[in-house]
Length: 170
Image (cartoon, rainbow, N blue to C red; front, top):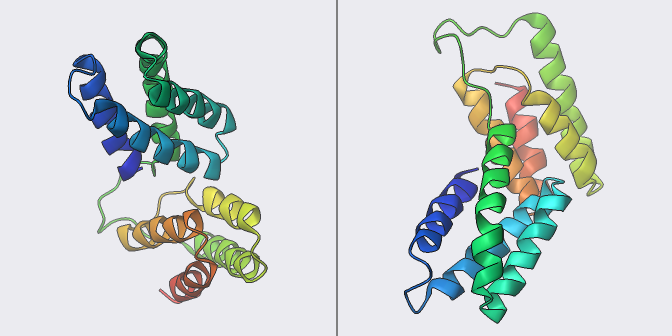
């Protein structure tokens, strides 16, 4: 989500400047390519395809297509950022308590992630992680879930499994 937020900021700025700088097209290509890959990894295939079209337009320096398509793409990207960002806590960190039912749910999902990582089953691991992110967790657990998500994004299954195992014991 941090990368997507940064990409949104950079892409908005160069779009608003109408690609006046010499490296604006290469910057667009780099950021759009990264978003294309990340969106594909989280299952946002339609948005990933739009990024692919924008990447190609950047390579061709098709400014008319980019100016028409990039604002719509950025709006959709903002929606994806909201969708995949963890929910804001309504409780303070000190009062957020994990009850026994949630603790059991957490352990089950983390175990699913461990097993899925052992068989390189990214889809199952990401589904279990997505399920976990629907609940409110203390900051430490949220941070660990975010790190597991990053490991999965980069197909670092051993690291994701190890952190899932470690998180079970926290």
